[in-house]
Image 1 (cartoon, helix red, strand yellow):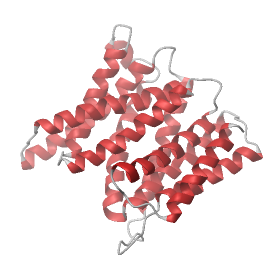
Image 2 (cartoon, helix red, strand yellow):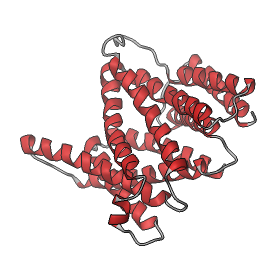
Image 3 (tube, helix red, strand yellow):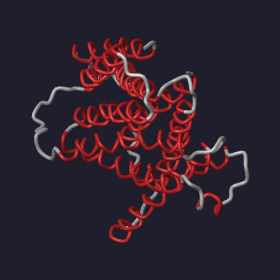
Image 4 (cartoon, helix red, strand yellow):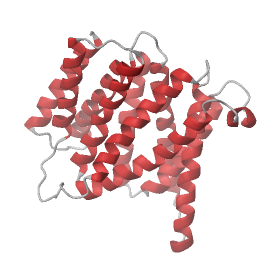
Length: 287
């Protein structure tokens, strides 16, 4: 359970860091790419065994790491586009409601328990995520470009599901640090290529604050994945339960921190969602 709590804390801290990026004028794309490089190096540093590149490239999980690296950089950009074109509430709901994909996968593929209590908890969790995330629409037209939130929903769910599948099927004992580092390495390579292409057209400026911000984000990002994998590796907690608690807790904690740290407005629907989130966590955890 401690690994799950640490993963939730690290994942929530990522949202706070992104909020601070906007406040201090840090280029998000540059910081994200540096974040992947930092996370990769940190993963290698945390690995207790000598790093054998040939062994990594011939490992059974290498293709999973490549796919996840591509998904990491791609889905984040989809998230940014969704927020810009459809609004923050749509982006938040689409990404967090994707928890249903790994939950269904865990129940169907791994024959995890699915009783009435767990079903009720999962339904309450999905409702709570929506109510906690929804914001007044104002003049934002959320009916255009529905393919973006749909792609975000599917992509986020595939990431969580793929991490669970690779961890249980191909990852050896003690392989979490190097697996995480490899994912971030491929994400960095893809992101760096994007920056280089843009630099050829518009030039490249890389202020120190972008490097510092990206480095801090990288350490936090690494541990969000590392502790999630450690939590998944714990046999006493089913993945369907873990992903439900993880995603709902992140939404709940992020909302509360936004209220107290950044003075964001919380509506009555948001408070109802937070209450349902707590109830759903209790129900699913003790199912």
